[in-house]
Length: 253
Length: 253
DNA sequence: GTTAAACGTTTCATCTAGTAAAACAAGTAT
DNA sequence: ATACTTGTTTTACTAGATGAAACGTTTAAC
Image 1 (spheres, protein in one colour):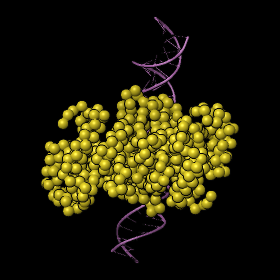
Image 2 (spheres, protein in one colour):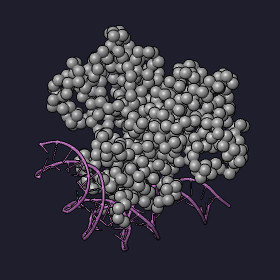
Image 3 (cartoon, protein in one colour):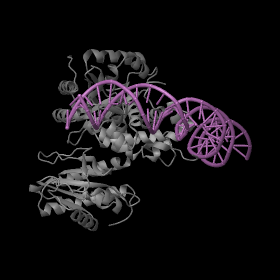
Image 4 (cartoon, protein in one colour):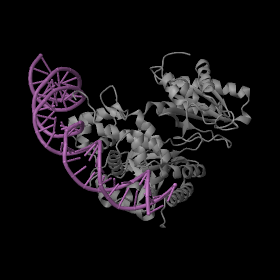
């Protein structure tokens, strides 16, 4: 093995670490299965990471991310362009629409919220950094719509779970919606994930023009009529554009 | 090597990862030196981590944390008790004192801000999650004061760098202050780190009674007279107590 | 303008150190 | 009571990671 600078067990350790992050509450056997590792190998690697506080065992023998990961992750946030550039843009958008806004990206086959801004008004939608959502329902569809067709095939299940009444029930209907999102350049979701909630999402592109994140505005339905929604769409897509430019994107709509 | 479930290269990889987090802008050689690894070993491990987006190289050949760390870290934040429990307490404290508050912990020989809350008033102190500060000056001293004497010895330099006029200049003076902080149970810092800025810090204890974090309130000096400061001290120490209890601490002052 | 030091990169023979497999104990459901 | 789980431990084997030393380039020194 010449010229391949790869330390296998280190790679596997990180595979395992990702699996721990994506499957909270899993034990050795399940994690080994998810990563395709031998049970004993997974066991040793987890032990090693536990010693360094990278992962920690809960009392019931399942694994979660450890304290050292917290520090590493916080440092990563402050070093990453995406977050650094997005924060002021999100705060500005939040102030303009006076609603909760978030930034989401893809991890595995899920959308994950990586940053947010909330207005100080009393009644607002609550957002959680770190929360994961399936990609095939509600405004996360915007993130999915701009990925490769192979990835889309993989993410949209044959029989989508019905999350609320407004969720499209068939695979075909979802794929059709994705096409429409691509065409119009943003995504509106009315009560798909949660009743009485409207959200608008717009894609963030990087220098290579691929969509790496989406900007979302989420608002209570009762105070979001057509004209308010127009306003939200304009400002949200605009914020996504500004972030794209900051990330080096040079294309146009 | 019987009964030692430790995969050495994985351990070293994480040592290296910590070094990358703590020394942004360092290259292979420097990172190898900091971790005590061979240059070629460090090189291969970094390559491995780069492939998985755990670290990334900047154009000038130095390393930083990569995109995968961002996801892992955000997930860690949302899974960690400390952050989950602290967030509402910080927000409550922030609202009561109407000033910027933060939560800090120790990483290596530095204090790092791991959470914050800012009031919406126009003039406020700005805080950055992820920012690092030396432990021996200003309100971070509160975090240092409650550590083991061996650790303290290690952190307080023989000739402390003067940060502003109000920084104690000698090792002895700093050690003396640490004793006072331990005695009174909190720490006040007037213009030590930045002129025109007052801060108050109080220790957060965990179930084992060790101090794992500190709650800080930072305010502009011009609007913080003695009576306001009294108020801040009371609320800050109270918030630290509430967080300690939430973490399982059962002792008393 | 020459020299020297420092850096990232590459190679390769050596042998440590990580691995797979299988057996184990402890628990849980049937 | 039995048959699955689960996490844990052992062992022999050799794949694969390692240290050292050399390489070409860049940066600093004088």
